[in-house]
Length: 175
Image 1 (cartoon, rainbow, N blue to C red):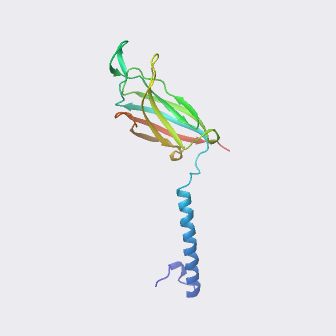
Image 2: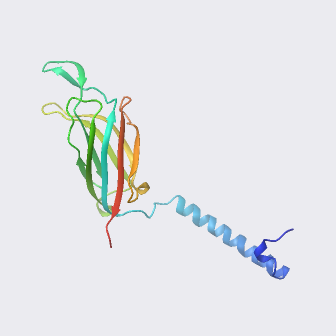
Image 3: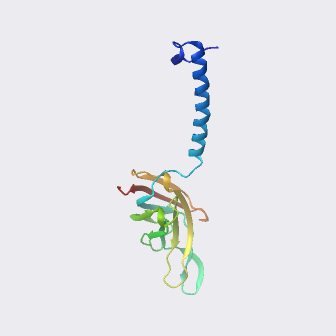
């Protein structure tokens, strides 16, 4: 059998022992890799989450044209960003199912205040009198963010075909 190149200059019995040690270490490394892969990431725990709410398209129409109901003809969408028990929102875009917000919101994130692993993005319809309606939502893994903006886009869950596009980044507090 051939030996790895880095063991070529050592005596054969030493090489066999070194291979046994490497195999033992390899099993240990594999166990460590699995433990890291399936454990909570050592990502951001405290800092500021930035969300550039770009746009949505194809949102549900939930607002009717008149005071007495009728067919839904539009929506007044805004975006809620929620993480670690904190929440912020964008301004509403009136009478538009394809809003362009182009608005950046920020949120302080602190693991001691709640789960920071998930960022909830919820598109809502603003109403002054009636109950506000959810137009769809999306969840983003906070640990996938860095200090560089990253674009997320796609179909909203329970959004009847609506789509959302945002840029997100996370700036950890300096310690």
